[in-house]
Image 1 (tube, rainbow, N blue to C red):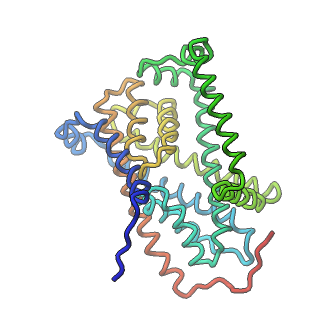
Image 2 (cartoon, rainbow, N blue to C red):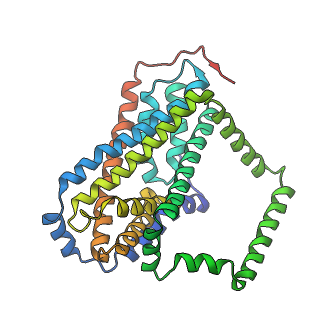
Image 3 (tube, rainbow, N blue to C red):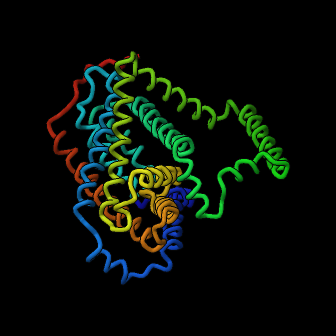
Length: 344
C-alpha cells in the first residue's frame, strides 16, 4: 500500500485556515459560562424558529445549484440534468467544511464524472459564480453605507471608532506617508506583473480570466441574463431570511427587527473573505460585534452566534452528505449522450 506524503505547504494551505478560525473562536469564548449556555438551550431557545430556518438554507443552495446549471447549460448539447449540479452544489458545502475551498474543485471533478463536462468549461462557470457573490457582498457593503449609516456608526462606535472621523483622517496630512508607501507598493506590484507577464503564474491568471469571459459569454441575450440576475437576487434574499428567522428563537433578539438583522447579516457576510471552514471564528466575531452594538450583552450575543452557527452548519453538512450519497444512486443508469457539441 502506497503512503501519500504531503508537503508542509499542503498542510499549511489546508489546515492553517482551520487553526485561525479555532484561535478566533477560543479568544471570543474564553470567558464563556457553560452553565448559562446549557440553561439557555434548555429553557431559553424557541427551537421552532431554528427549525424553520433550516429549509431556507437548503432552498438557497438549491437555487445556487440551479443558477450554476443555467451558466453551464449553453456549453453542451444536450445539457446536463439539473439535478446533478444542484446535488453537487449542496454536497460541496460538506466538502468545504473538511478542507476549505476544496468544494469548488470537487464540484468540477464531479461534473466531469457525472456529466462528462470538461474541467476547463466548469472552472469558468464557477469563477463567474464566485464573482457574482463578490459583487453581492460589495453591494451589501454599499447598501450599508448608504441606507444604514446609523447602524454602521453604532457598530463602529461600539469599537471606539467613528465613521466620519475615520474617513476624514484618511485624507489628512497624518496619512500622507502611508498613501505614498501604498502608491509605491502598487507601482512596484504593477512593474513586477509587467516584468513577469510571460511567467507560468501570469499564464494561469490569464487562463482564468479567459475562462470567466468564456463562461460569461454563454449568457447570451437579455432572457439569460435576466434569469441569472433573478436567481442571484432570490438566492441572497433566501440566505438573508435563513439568518433573520433565527432572531425569533431568542428573547434578546426577537424584537430587534430587520434593521439590526440586515446590518448583522451584511457584516457577517463580509467575513467570507476569510477562508475558514464554514466561517468558524470570523462569522462569530462579526455577529457578536454587530449585536452588542445594538444593546445585546456580549454573553448573549456570543450564545446566539454559537448556537445558530452550530445548528445551521450541522444542517448544511448533513444535507451535503446526503446529496453526496444520492449522486451515485441517481446516476447509476444515467449517462449523457456521447455525441455532444461544445458551443463556442
